Picture 1 (tube, rainbow, N blue to C red):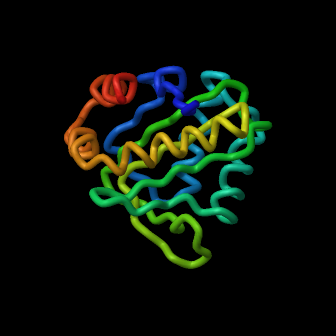
Picture 2: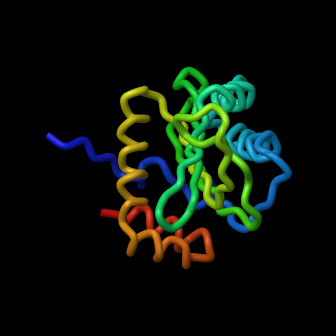
Picture 3: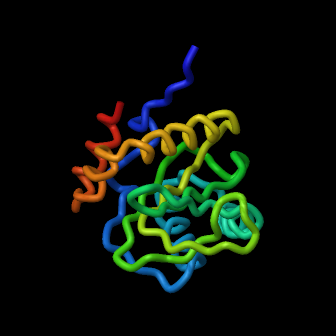
Length: 157
């Protein structure tokens, strides 16, 4: 049996931000932390833990058409599951997944908040699957508003 998760149960138009620009990861994560605390999706421990985890286990990923990052932390810091999508105006440097010293500039960030560890793996697989489909990625890149990006993900498959 195939494990497929609908993005719809993790998304909200309120958790999609476009054309943002940040000086560094800490500023990005602080912004996400503020929004998610306001909506009561995370514990107060989220910010420190997502920063620490990203330092130890970088999540930058080079895909054929764009570079992405998929930061996340342990389920203990998450109250309700979410995907927070940030499309950057100016790329931000992230460590490349599976490396200690390779940096890449990313354009899109998909911050995952999951309440069960097994869900995290399935979501990562779904996102990586999406980014292997050139036509879908071209469509995503062309989208310029929160509603269109939200619709893209909830209708993906």
